Amino acid sequence: MPYLIGLDIGTTSTIGILIDADGGTLAIESRPVTLHADHANWSEEDPAQWWANCGEICLALLSRSGIAAGDIAGVGVTGMLPTVILLDETGKPLRRSIQQNDARATEQLGVFRQGMSEERFLKLSGTGYSQQLVGPKLMWLREHEPAAFARARHVVGASDFITSQLCGSIQVEHNWALESGFVDVSTGRYHPELVALSGIAPDMLAPIGDSHAIVGAVTESAARHTGLKAGTPVVAGCADHVASAFVCGAARNGDLVLKFGGAGDILLSSDKPVADRRLFLDYHIVPGLYFPNGCMASSGSFLNWVIANWAGGEVSKAQVAGVSIHQWLDRRTADVVVDSSVLFLPYFLGEKTPLNDPFARGTLVGLGLNHDIRHVWRAALEGVVFGFRHHVETFEELGLNIGRVFAADGGAASDLWLQIAADALGRQVTRIDRHPGSSLGAAFVAGMGVGAVKEWSAIGQYVAPGRTFEPNAVSQAQLDRKYRLWRELYERLKTFYPALAG
Image 1 (cartoon, rainbow, N blue to C red):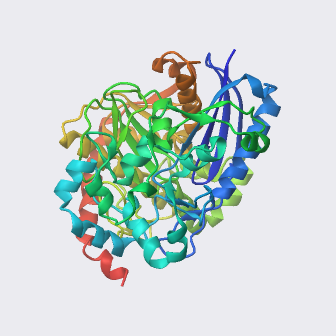
Image 2: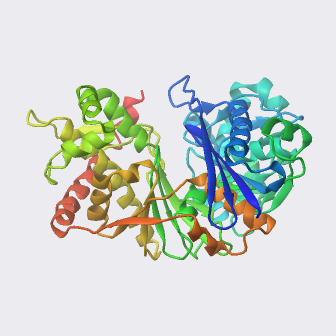
Image 3: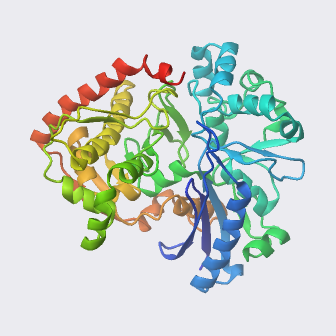
């Protein structure tokens, strides 16, 4: 039987999975990743740490599973995007990666957008001007780190870097290329006008590959590092959020996925490649489909901030009860009435979609002496869900069909959070219980690429839908009112936030 390995280069960890071609998962391994924020609005990681993690993970997967390296039919890699990694002529990183949520290039973005109207940029690239674009970050590097930039021969993303280390071929997966802002969405190829906006040499941009395209084979050097057999096929891979949504079962038009992770991702499977400045657009893993999507810069990371700064007295109580601090706060908050007056805007890292506002900040209003950690916790949960609803309304404004709704990632384990989601969205929300994450999507794509898996629908063998949460009519009405106040709060503050930044 053929076996497959998927590697996921995530913001907080590197994860690997080893599966067979018939729906079985044999082993999962992970290693932590260090996020560096040396200055305000900076977010960086070390690609060398990712590669070291991948070596350890592959060795551990083979050891734990007992599968021989020669039985691995293919390897796929997924990762966050669009990260920015400068490579020298030998393929080595010249500096840390600049992460997708890094917001240092505000000034450069202003210069960048002067070169083309947003209407034309949106029509060509399928996306609007935002902090996530690669071009302004390259402009920042050219201005502030000219020595490193002068030595750069290629710019790639996280998964592309690992793919290059595995097989020696420097390419970029088509979703990194699309989200970079350099690609004509109608052709899938680099557009000279888009590339020219940042003033970079066109040959810095690597060839583009489809997710399941074989881009090379494991080299002798990579084999020594990972324990894989030299010659094992390597596929281009895919974006982490795309892979994760596909693994949830979002394989047909109208399927919506809410990802309750460190950031808050929302992806809608669609047969229409909509272009709107409030959203991102990615290719679906399934040919012929697209993933219009959004990303809230902080979700789980925002809740962790609440815990670290507001819930100190609750940690010991959770330990005594034998539950996690998240579970404990959910229990404590279960009896808080829905119409609590406390509102929380979760914009701790600015906000990506649908606001595209780097100046927005976390804002808590409505507190009284009668409020405590329970009210703050519920308002935090609601704030993230309201962000999801804002995206859903954007999809609907664009005429997109929404059918099934799935919830995944760590936060989806919270019954309270998913009930709030069902109530606020007015829709059934189904939890995905057995969800190994993006690494499974990478392994599955590798299987399709090498022919070990025959049908895209076979992904259903690997995942299991769990509980479905039904909207409560009373709570839905109360949250409707609260959501409108939440939206109005940002509108009243959006001209004030820039003043806070000086």
